Length: 273
Image (cartoon, rainbow, N blue to C red; front, side):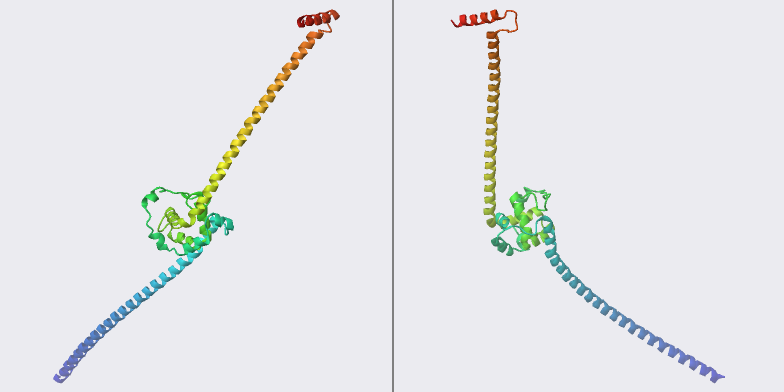
């Protein structure tokens, strides 16, 4: 009996010992799994971060490509709506869009416009400019400048691209064109001055023509008045002559007959004598 209890106790102790060993082994394994999981999680997080950075960089590159492509395409689409696709050589010459101007514009950059030292007082003169109803070029330009700008937008790709990128994100339309005309002043001023002189000459010629027409009209009115007066005077003289004839000849239908005629003639001779 005692031996049986001893065997049972030994078995229980052995089982307890095994349970402790299994528990320790399980705890150790659990710790190892947790550590491995944490390690894997960190690796996954680092890998995900790297992937995200790569995607971000790639997206940024693609955005720049699309922006560049849009800068090349969109202005050309816009320009078709504001001007004709081609211009006669005489218009290009008249509005100063020359080969020299194109070569000069090729040397300009976006920073040329962004960093241009434009006095704010210049912009205050046209704080609220409006767009022309026939185009999207600002109305604060002169007629000659507006036409020049339309031709430039359709024939000089650099200016079209600069305007598309800069307006209105970086500057207003009015500021862009003020900077542009200041930059190209030496190239376009002679053509603008020549156009102004032609306009003044045409206006003077029109004024002379209008004054001449007024003079001719006045002279015609005077001639008509003289003719009218002459006609009235002629009628008056004719009427007087008729009265004299009636007086001299008398009334042929009267009862006095010849006596009346002789009396009238005698009276006239007496007055003449």
